[in-house]
Length: 383
Image 1 (spheres, helix red, strand yellow):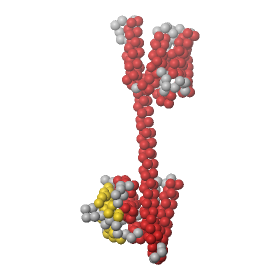
Image 2: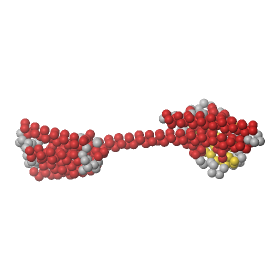
Image 3: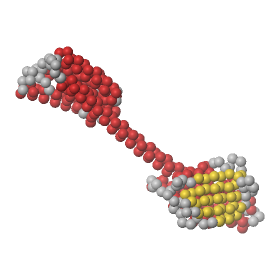
Image 4: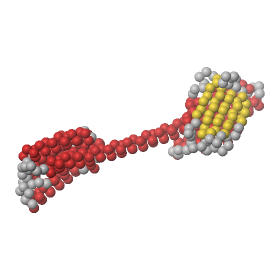
């Protein structure tokens, strides 16, 4: 009975019964009529089942076709027809199955409170009828307890089915939300990679192109060096972009993994743009996610110096490693360009650090320049 009701949510309020509704109504009707006919034929309990009796039972079961569209109405109609049938003198049988299926469905769709009230009303009416017409003088009629037990069991079955459906839905919603979050994180990760690659490379290309244009006529050797730097920056950018696009095409969850081993390349690119970079400290061996985040944070810092720090010509990079954390400090001697410090770069650095359980702070320093400080946990994936 619960299994039949479990398909209910898909068609609540629909105007046409489903194949499951038809199957359940036909099966219940056939079973009730068949068993009742057998009882009347073999046991002569109340006499044979006549055509009127068959019609009576059919009318009590057929409304089950619409038990999901109008569960209260179907339950009341089926109950009235079944209990009046039992009082009609026709053979007894399992006719109670019809209102039981209706009550289970009612509790499944509308909840235990509505199901219990409806079942209680019908049960109270049946008990009243038994007391009014009963002939058990001074003795307890077991049917009185049977009505209460019947309602309790039916409502319990419907409620269990309702709770199971809610649990399945909740599990499916949690799984869908987890998939959405994973997809969102992967999208943001790819966006950060593309931003870091493009912003850094284009900043260096822009600076070197400006140098080449400025000295092309007077100092062709410097112009040639600038063009070679542009070529190298373009080559590095294309390599990283191909790797990133390869991730998108393959559907792999892993993004390209540069690390602090490529720090000399960042220093060389910044130096080619006219920035003197002094690197201090040693990060040591790092887990791959921390290594990537550290490299991208340093890359973004140096890119911001080249693009936004007015009159900057020197940057100090400090790496301090403890047992639990890697601390990165980048300090330049320039003047911050208004509006140049709050874009996607700083947001990307902050997102990378937070993903690992770390943090990033950035701002101008009192004696001039701009400083970025990042702390990245290197054990346990965060704290």
